[in-house]
Image (cartoon, rainbow, N blue to C red; front, side, top):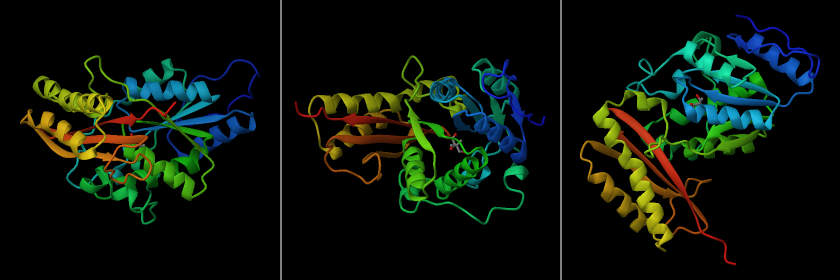
Length: 301
Ligand code: PAF
């Protein structure tokens, strides 16, 4: 369905949620919103929406007047042996959820709309993109920053909301925006967890009941690290050892990394100073999950 032109703010009833599949229709919608004086918020997603995504939408709604959500499973950020083909997709469900949230526009392009010819132009944040997930998923963050740049050019949002769950992605996008002077504010929303602590993720849908229980070890290990930090431990090596020890107790969980890094530069830290990111990635069966926590020292009073 092609998007229509939005009525000016305050000009009576708003149109319902629009769904645009083309770049042209999305641009027309967003430019009309801007001409009407609306502040535009963008929530980039790959669909298969859960409460975590909806929390990003709510943050965007609270800070902008016109919320666009993109749904695009971006092939550029998947490696050749990764789960691109089986990544969960349910457009009708996503559409209904976003409608309930009062989203103004869904941008749901096809792969050929986003990449009419195979991409040969990339945006890459050198150095940062090879850290954490970038180390075990070569090219992943280059794919993310390329598609996010394209989305920023298409929607031209005033702000874009990302989840803290992918803390490396947040650091890399912030750096891209800074280095390329992109006129968009990056807003970060907290991790949303299941009642038992598992961080919400579209990939949780892959877990069978046994793996679902095993997956809990990620958040348990992070909580253990946080508690150790709160008791006064500041050595990154000791904090990592405590987290890894817990993960090793779950033999079907294969650790990818457990790191303590600076949340901006993603450089490893030896001693946790004022603010450090503890990030974990592990395979539960074939499913790769990530989670993290920020450790903050209280400023001296
Ligand atoms: O976080 C995600 O879901 C994706 O990496 C993003 C930001 C939508 C880019 O494809």
